Image (tube, rainbow, N blue to C red):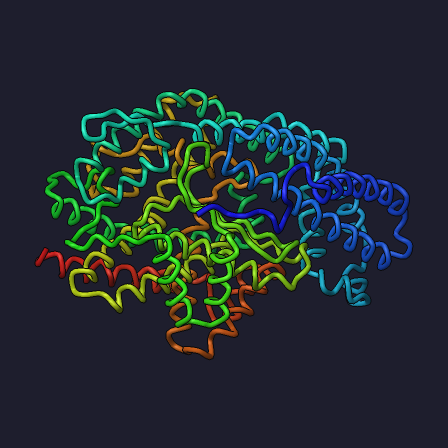
Length: 590
């Protein structure tokens, strides 16, 4: 249940790692020297564009390999001082790429015939979207000196705050009473107790979790204020109307698409609120569902999996979609791409890191055997499969925006959930249906509350740093707005702003709505698969492969989906509403 990183490097002391680290530094110097010598004029523009693209691809490949090894090592051992030191060095050195990137981008924008130049070169045509996007975003560039200063200062600003908060949350031990004995357990293990069958265990875990956050609330608030303050300053300097507008542009979408999706979600919230209220009633609560019972399993079925059983289950059902997906997944398990064991010093949650330079991925999860853990593995394996579909592209063309980042992951999650429902007994079907709605609620309702929270956080941060009490108050009000009377207002989660790491990434503001986008877009894509069957598999792989070189609207149009239409989002949401209605019917027999 631990991953192997030997496909990257065997250790920090290995000759291969040392050589690549030296080459990263050398290539950065060469890029800077080339920029200084070649971009004073627009002569031979095509050759210069080609040279820059080739240099950037080569550098990005080596840097990604080195940095991935360092960050992955740190993610499972946040106390690894050597990893942290090298990461700091790489972060500092990487700022030296800012100057040549800014100079090249401004030089590129100065060319009057960029489309003609692109058409005259195979290398440029391959990277046409990358080049055209650079030109479009050049309007938000500051001077070279300002961009370099921002890049360097972020290492001691937002990046440092982010690392501090990750270390605080990863090393936080929660004191909890287990059978009369107080134990100290890592936060991920305690949070996973929310899925336990025993009601007393869920309540104890919730109380212990909230109490533990008091140890790090002031430090986390300082980190959050520092990061969001920096974002507001830089966003304003660059000329973006707001951090949200910058995120929308970086997401390769437009505000009307986001608004169409959010309006569809807002109109559907009452249906989710009915579900939460009914679940609360089934669990014996009178004033709505308390937060500690959101993930409580319903029904007599308590599905548990060993890690090996989880692997077999996922591979079997992925094969119903395609052999390529199933074989890829089997290989990921066999080659130890997954670190699944919860342990002290390992960060919580789950993620997938696609390692383009070696055409592999690494997946972190905290597996305890629940069906939710199985779907989490399927989710992250979807991200890895997305990486596979992009692996034949250059590394520059493998970067996709946040909203479509969740497409493959939620698609794979859906395969597993649908398969489980199909094979289930009536009792199992009830439990699985409820679990599926619960998961959708997290991605729709809870994500909506996080969007409200972050919007309010940015607005208030313009005037002052927010106190712990202010942050808790905003979070509670955001949850009340999203969940309505579905949740018991006396038992919400005021510390969700500490628990979710996305708030602490200066370069990933509003990393909440992409999850809702991903779920609903993936449901629309899955519906196309159900319509077309095996004939859709090739189109699906092509869609994923195109996400690095197209805007989101164009990607969606490949499978005849119009994301600018509220009707599309409502249609996807109606699939969840259908399940809610079925749950309400079945609950009468519970």
